[in-house]
Amino acid sequence: MDKTQKYDTAVHIVEESQLSLSDKLKGIAALFPEFDETQTQSNLHNDKHIGKYTLEKFAYARSVGMTVDDAAHAADKTSTVFNEMLEGKHLSLKTFIELIKTELFVAAEMRRKHLSNLDMASASDNYKATLAFLEKVYPELYSPKAIIDSTVDDRRANKWEVEVTHVETQEKKQTPKETKP
Image (cartoon, rainbow, N blue to C red):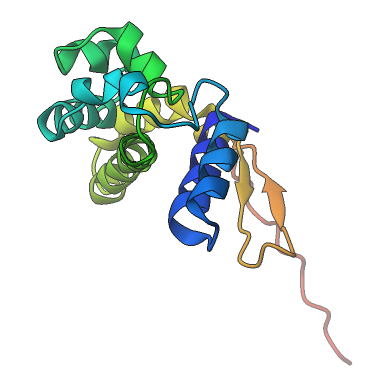
């Protein structure tokens, strides 16, 4: 399970499931071994590093494509503390879920922003930089050999492999019409 799937599962466990608090804590600890399910105030010292303003600065930096390390520095924190927090180390459940939701949001926002730019600029030559960015950052989705997933229903996945190549135009030769006697 990749990190995005783990984050999505964690948000589901905490916010969408009907589990008890102790079961939620156990579920998060199973996904993130660094997370301490005992939640005592003495072991939640990373909570003080992530106020609303710090989280907003981190989120903005991540949404423009910065790495976690660079975004942490942009938020005036060390990458060590942010990497720990993204694993749930020394965070309360509430703060950890808030950080996870922010990380999920910024990943989607970065993609949405560039796709929107591509949509708006597709009539001109200004789309080339955005397209190059998408191809480099998300090669599995936007490279020339990307697999397009048109899944509408999760039970039925339709996938096509698309490869764009240069095709020469050829004129169709006309054959003389048959005449009737």
